Image (cartoon, rainbow, N blue to C red):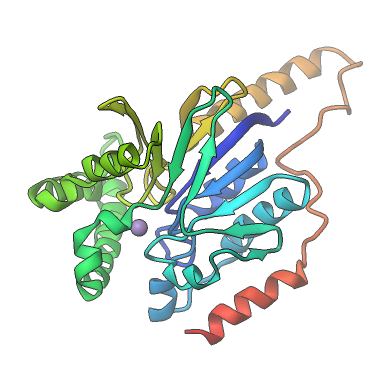
Length: 297
Ligand SMILES: [Mn+2]
């Protein structure tokens, strides 16, 4: 059984950059069902793709699964971010069933109106100097590389994972008052617009909390933390830690298989989500947007 949600909010996958945890995201998408999915920006890292073409199969798999969900009836709304701002020219249009919008408004089952926006318009660094942001993005990529080796070394010594880049980034960002004001600015904007809350991404820091009577909901990212926000049927919103979610699904599957081994009747009927028929393996219609991206470099 897939995990069923009313709505999923996912941001900052950075597909097309080698930091993207596309395998984990593709697996996550295979385990979930939703009426609506909001892609809250920086889904495809076009800045990185322009510098260097990087598009492994797992990144295709993520897009294919999203398009497949759309085909099966999930409404998908794509709100571009600053790393995929080239898609902002398509706002108001629909591609393969995916609606592209600058911002969106989501109404929860319990009647709250949430503003859905990537959040970079509040990031003064991005607003005033795109060049500075590109430099920052290259530095971040380097940090991710260092982080990988740092943690490989930690593992050798039996130490737990420790996100170096996360720690440095938080420290650096805290030092810059305009970025630490990110949350306040978003919440203020949502309040002025008469919304009950705001769903965003951009700063790669998943968060769910109440600020000044407004719900501040940050999807996090699929580069390091692998998080998503999910709305249940009753309107309750949950922050999902993707890796823990997948580990729990794996454990439950192993337990089911163990139980199944005991009784003959249980055999054969289990629906295996992980190895479910993909059906549209070649996905020729996906080749067009990818080719377009390649030409647009
Ligand atoms: Mn961003």
